Length: 117
Image 1: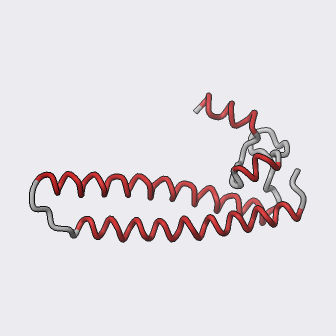
Image 2: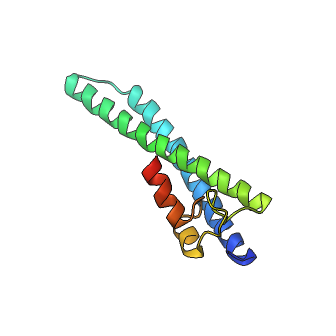
């Protein structure tokens, strides 16, 4: 299990990532709004604007999901359950937490979760 120092380091990683994602989401929203207001001279312009808006929306949705996972991890840190697998209640390896600081499953349980999903 991660010790207090490691958890604090991971908390800082989560907070930095949260700020980065929040800024990116805001930029994506501005970009989508700008694309919506752009002039389309023909159907090719319209197709390009539609495609760009769609891509921006997909990216923003994925980032919103990651932001929710980060917020959940920060809550687990506050209540003292961070680093404990939601499925088996065993410790999540520090290497896994460093790779994915908002992980809520240990590696074996994550594999089970993905198969059942």
